Image (cartoon, rainbow, N blue to C red; front, side, top):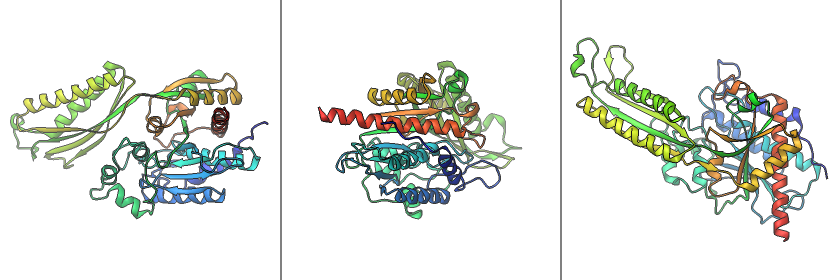
Length: 425
């Protein structure tokens, strides 16, 4: 039986529809849908209403993760569903496709299969994972990592907004009415597998002319949260020889991160910098910053972490009175995806676009890095123009979105048939 085809126009209309929620006020195409914001509440409501209109059973867990499960023709009600997940939150000035394509695409797969009459052995679940970006609450992939038992629920419920002290994930989940009562746990809320469709966020597919990326794994990643305490002073009268300038120390750390990343062929960034004061004529007394470091080798990340600790001790010796503190606020080890799930994606990619696909690893982190620890997982990439992401210029064409969602559909059907054949034996 030939598999049904995704409706390109309907898919595109839904992507554009959801971009209204949390749209940036002054930048065309820009999104500012931070996790658990009012814009996030509105797009979540859209997702839930759409899922219910398709006859899905909707559950919200303790981290606000939303699971919309469709029991298709022939599917076993007591069988663990095959999940299709990504995220709807964005960066402060982000784009319309990062994460969104995977969530909207999952609903499109369900709607297309539902209309076709294709029989499945298992239910399908479209998932919106909470706070994947980590832009408002500084811990990426929060919802998926708690679900995978990689992180403690209370720790994440108490996680404070980086820019709004006093606002926690729990308080904001309650504010937007998405503090669910389903246990956030992969044991009690199990998935048979997890497939994630995402824009590439790089230029490998674009430069090689390939239409689909068959993602085999994700490089390791750590966030280092560093606090530097010096002493405030007058910019015009405090002697240079006695200053304890926290901003100078922060600058040296930023340069160290950049230089280290280049030396080890990794990726290092300081994207969050929060000085205690912003007056032109005041020496900054304290600074908080977060460094994002990524590499395919966990051993190299260990060495990077040790190097940062050494630098902080050297800065304290170099500037008497300066104190520093560093914590790993989020980490993910390098991940290899499941061979069976990868094979299903590769089969689907061949079906949809012949040989125009490429096996590759993801340099960016995703919720699939968490789900892969407890459930067979694979990812699908589609090109993103000029590799731009986390930016209003982020763009993937309607045809590219269509092909990605079609590969997602055929991947989950292939995995369902694989499980059915094994269970039959």
